[in-house]
Image (tube, helix red, strand yellow):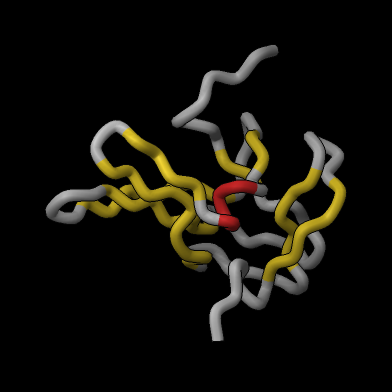
Length: 99
C-alpha cells in the first residue's frame, strides 16, 4: 500500500516555518527516508517528503544525488542520530532562501 511518507515520520507544526517533518521515534545516522525530489531536464518535482522538509544552517539530514539515464533523484538521508519527535532539516540547495 502506498504511503506518501515513511512510517517513522509525521507532519506537525514547525518552529522553523509552517509545517515540518518530525520523527515518531529515534532515527540512527545513515537512515535513508526516500526520494524528496526528481529532476527531469530543468524541471524539479517535489515529493510529499520533499514538500515538508525545512531549511537549517545546522541540518540533521542531507539530500543524496542519485543519477539515472534521463533523470536525477534526490533521497533524504540522516547525517546524525535524530531524537524522537525532532524535526528533520536539510540545507536547501534548489531554492533561494530570503533572510
